Length: 321
Image (cartoon, rainbow, N blue to C red; front, side):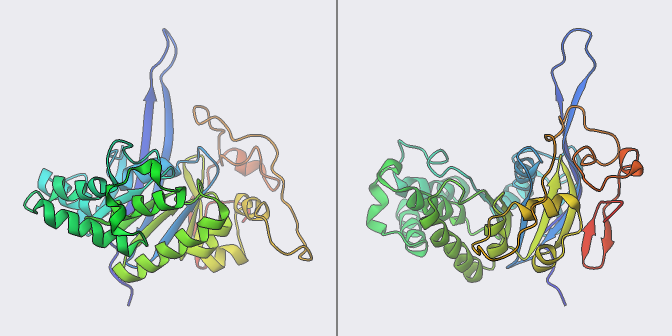
């Protein structure tokens, strides 16, 4: 019997209306459209796709930084859209985010100890300063940092250490869902494995659910239990990790996988090269948005948008998959 989802998104959508020029028609960007997925305790859902596909917009909706313009977002069974202020405050403590740039996400004028204690000072003001400092020191130990560094400033740490600090800060409220927005892309290759292994250990220790956003499919293969592929704001394929890497169905997924470097010079490679650029989100093509670049496109692809349908264990939106 599967665990109850901590988070459930049903037809989640985000649209932005851009300022228009005089006499120009209204410009609307559908950054995310009809995204549906679940997150269970101790599981990782990876979201992949090119820049501009809607990954970070999805992260902002899940973390309640932005309210969705459509669909439903349920956290621990509570609908975010209909929640009162007290419920929203509680739910925001359940979902935290780790950003891509660890230095940019930390206040350069704030010591690490104060940065880690701040979430408790804001959300749990009944705790004493000594209790907050002790909690910060304990979290530093858990992420592999020495507590005596608490009085240092962000510029005094390496990139990998700063990302450990960002992870520690996200865990201070003991959330159950962590959104990881490209958490290792700004780190040196030698440090990435250390941070990824730390995330795996923390997930096992706290039973965390991860929404892992990345463009690096080798990292996704190491971290994810399931993978959701997005293109121009829409989910085009969703499957268990091993199923997706072994037998991708959507032509866009195949192209992404074929572009992933493989550390085996003798392994045969069949590179699927895409022609053209990502279409403008202000004027997406009719039918399947991928059809101008798809080598398998048929006439129907240029007229009708395919629905996301089950094909075995995989959900795919493609007429020729």
